[in-house]
Length: 429
Ligand code: PLP
Image (cartoon, rainbow, N blue to C red; front, side, top):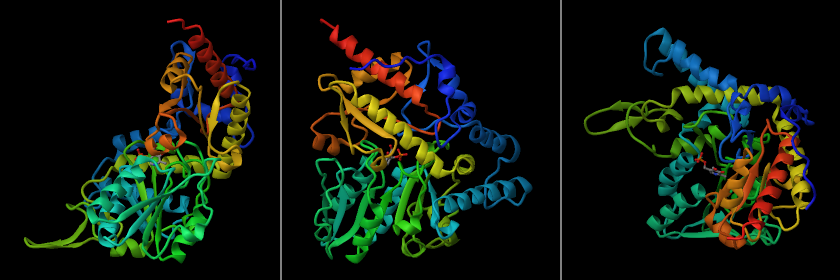
């Protein structure tokens, strides 16, 4: 194992990395100034959730202090301001992923709810006993369980695209993967467990050639790279605000407008109706047909502020920065004897996620030692139990990077990994 360079105090964290002015960015994130067990926090659990800049926190405070009101119904100034801010956030989301209009954007609680919305509405109407749903071995549980439940209810079949030895999707014979029975392909844009970037545009073209539609899970792509749902030509696209500098409790479902028009509502109640009698009701226009009850107004507005922040950085720059950090981290971790790294070898083929293991150590043990060094990573199955089974492990340790991470923090990670190795090697019990 090579010697890791120790972190020379907080100044070392401020070194700019190509692509972004990280020192300036870090000043926007109050939490990054804190210590954990007396060590500077090195937050490398961004695939689970990101930290929030002051600009997002202030947008939430401003809403609650200045114009808190319910939306779409109040005949007063505060209600109008809140409605305008909420709908402006929808327009920002649409522009951010190049959706053709804000009406294609439905606010949900998170990616999970967005996918469940699709299985409960589109799925129940379009999947039957002769249908097949095609997923991949790289899916998060939130893009597996809703489809398992739907196909079990409908007596439909569920199939998965497997992996190559490089842990990319096995697309050999792509033209034979789908047929007329395939109703939908559900595929993650970027794997949260391995970082693998999937060729979603190519997969969407193949699905459409077979008359199937495509749902892309964008939870790990929208925060980290430019995304264009029209260029991708997907039919549904789901993601979460909390992984992209925004608050928890807000997610997004993008859908092609004609699909939203033909789909039944997901939840029933206020806001999603036009006219109600004692016997029946007619539905509101899209997207409000899918937003029953009082929505998460403050956090939607907070997501709008997060998008402003990311736009100011530039998503191309975000991607360049993460590739540089990932490349450096791959190089450093590869120099460590014993450590097994999962996922594609080249940083161009992966997002800012690195999963790894010491063959003889449980990832939870490694994560616990890292925590004592101030380094926050995720350890476990990452909500990808079937994938872990494919890899022949119960879990992995995972470091995931974002706009405020530095090369020096990678050094701290590597140093702490060496300490974990030493700690357990000395453990004679
Ligand atoms: N899909 C992927 C690829 C994810 O990484 C995650 C969360 O880690 C999800 C879906 C679920 O996101 P949420 O918990 O915000 O619904």
